[in-house]
Length: 100
Image (cartoon, rainbow, N blue to C red; front, top):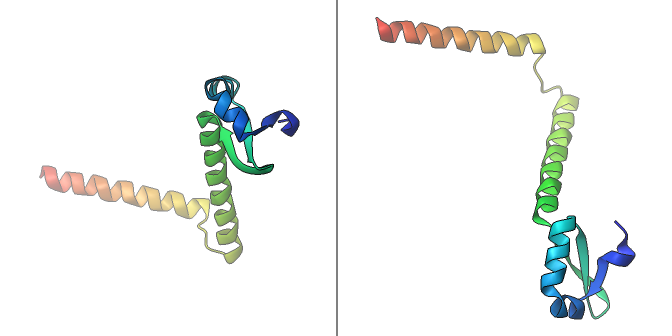
């Protein structure tokens, strides 16, 4: 994104609101709106915003996973599969008891 083209004063937004919204939406742009010469808000296409939020969520999950890994709070793959197999067997056993 070129910030030189992405910065507009609030007066521009007021005068060209429909055009600005259409351009931001169609081009999936991000626009920085200034007030009294200072950047105040960001106008962003909702799809771009959603992608950004999803990326942030994934980064948080990765950071938390790394933290847990460093603390030694994890299960081996074998242990995980054993747990899943045990749960499946317990479920099957419960189903047999219900049918009896």
